Image (cartoon, rainbow, N blue to C red):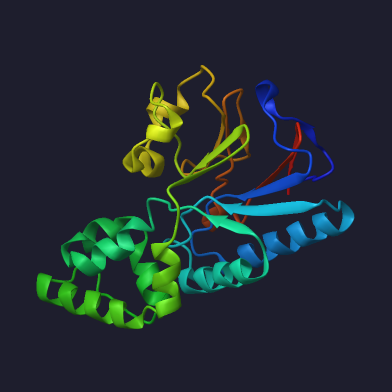
Length: 245
């Protein structure tokens, strides 16, 4: 994508001219793409200096792709050197849930959970019985580094900055942004995607894969299916201008 092809932020929404926001879509175990997109952000900053920048990651760091562990390591490294915000996606909810309730494994497996387990050195048969599920959950809990547990524990459900609201999946129409339920922030689809009226702020989200970023008057979807397409998208916003990396 051409980062020079900037455009106006939809519907007159804007943020401070003194800050540039970089929002990154669903990563899903592609540590290689995370490294690549952060190099792009660094290069963009070198060419276009700004007083302050903030990197915002929209969740779904794990599952499906081959290196969920590497993604979490990469995000922790970013947190140590940059001002960053990390949101929780629906896939992150399964990590603690599986440890506390191993019977959820068949559901998590259908969403790519076995790939996450494997990235931590925990390998599951396709159809483990309940006893085996208990053992896998214990192995996984033991394999998770404390720094990863702490990182996952401090993920945010949403984040707002001036006229822009960031959530993994979206928001429920008719509900004030400050009152959104986490279930909707992590999981909502059609009720949000089909809503045409403006929200209180421009909503930037992922969760529902699209071929190219979907820019609507009330929302921007930057989940471009990285684990399948190899395309991890970053949206930048500064003032009333925006573009993609």
